[in-house]
Image (cartoon, rainbow, N blue to C red; front, side, top):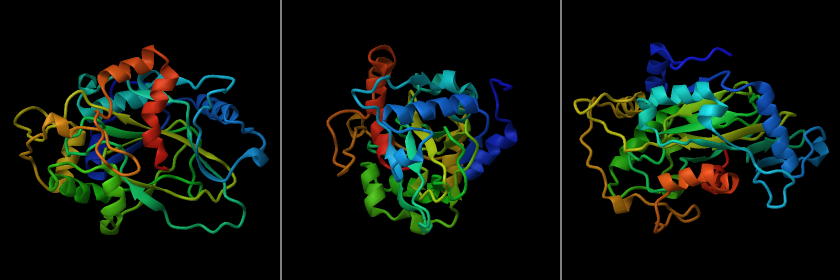
Amino acid sequence: MHMTDTPLDDPDLARFVADQFLVIPDCLPAAQAKRWTDDALRRCGFDPADRSTWPEGHRFLATPADAPAPCPVAELRDLAPKAWAAACQLLGGAERIEDPVTVTGDLVMNFPMRPGTPSTPPSGWHVDGDFNHFIDSPECGLLAIVLFSDVLPDGGPTWIAPDSIGPICADVLAHPQGLSAWTMRAERGYHRQCRRFVPLVGAAGSVVLMHPLMLHSSSLNTRDCARAIRNLFVPLREPMRFDPAARPLSPVERATLSALGVERLDFTPPPAHRRHATDHETGAAQPRPYDTAEQRRTSITVDAATCARQRCEAQAALAC
């Protein structure tokens, strides 16, 4: 697999600004992706080779406390260096990213439905992240999805609405107090303003990088194979900025301005106390930050599987 520090060329970057997402193939070997998938199934009591042991529909494979093997945790830069390099390009350089960015082996599965189950439109449209969202939120600079299996049409792919970014950004700007993901999911109805809906299909080992406010949804798996993914955030050291006179803008920042139809944005960052976690079930403010650099360091150096898994559970709870 040929690797470079800049896997995205200028047309790729322009396409991200226009489309708000990229599917990047060949980010990790298919054999490694299959090994992670099979191990995740075994840790949760399912036989990869015996479909009679599989449930139906979506299942977050959280590693049980008594599992015979621990949940693997890897840094994105090590697991999928091509995807890491692409994320660095999209965010304006590695120095802007709050590293480490971890990927856990607790996968989000979409198991086949029983034969004859009719296909239905994607449902449960939402934005990820149990924190108070602003247009500059550093908690998530990019939303990433690692495909640990081939993801086929009608095979339970995540669906995205690329033209949701404009309405969502405008709505967030109109609420200077911030919006929780719960509020955006339960009350806003963004999908009714969208006309473009795209299934995220691709080969095992691909990684999808998308705008952090991308509206997305789950879908039924009406094929005969299981779909395995892991979603994660690529966080920033500092909030985004939208004034090109202050410093060069990243492609993600340019994509935000493009979605709003402007070339620059006068935005006053919220006070620090507004940047907090929110309850997944109610959207209520929580008296703590969503995530801190110290927690991220801890997730790698002390009890890595437990800490990283806890941090990612809120992201995976909303089916993708």
